Image (cartoon, rainbow, N blue to C red):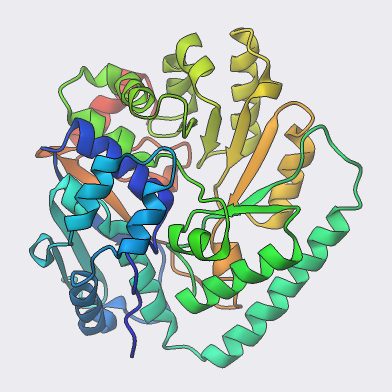
Length: 397
């Protein structure tokens, strides 16, 4: 059977944008990424171990093809020296391990080594585990149900088009690589959305499918980028500002959507002063109440005397179309908006989905943490560091 991953472009754009920034500024950083399943699967993930290791072997045999490098090099914000690095890049099998958990049920997958050699494992590992997991179910029945649900989404979008117009258009993007049912289904979904509702569907985080289907590749930064700065020698209180400044210097006006929830929205806004608020195009929501978050963002722009109509709020936390429509109605007359929809686009098959992540847990031998606005998204193995981070940013437990 063909491997799950056949192209190193089959990943989120923000892996490349963060990768380039870290290669240019902190190539010496050592990092550890850990796989976690946050919900109970239908059967033990440890049963997938042999297949997972086989897929990791296959992944580590891949390299970037000339056409893939040419596509990346054609993106305005990707520099030629980064493309040269990717030309000789290969994943090193010694840097990633997979084994059954001590209870014999879970999977333990850890990527550890130079960050510029291990940070890109994340999305591939999640896509591999998901696809292997769902191969155990009735795939024909799942595809029938998936197509039925996709058709209903398209019909719902056409109904929505008849609603009164707002100041800014409704636009959504595919953010579903990591939790997709399969690569084949992912491609079918995007092909149909582009054909049927191009007035709403405006891009995809998956670089391979963006290239193949003529879509706009979407993505800027993820939590790991900001978290790494907790270990890079700046005062812990200043790590967000250091990360944002490094991003500005790297991209100089491109990729201007900042992620806000590494230590919570309030702590983020305390660092997001007039300088950053003018330089960044907007903000991305990924935890907590999206209405509260959005109102805080708009109030912050107002306090800084910045016209929020020139900025964009991107929502990306557990969205489906109805949640997106409701947020659109609430905010679209006051600011530009966008909606990154993941699982509900690429794995809405009538089956219970996995809630899996592979997060940065250490950098340079030090723990990192995320004080998410959603308690269930907190991830840190070191309670002492977590308590210290809360104290520094005045975030209650």
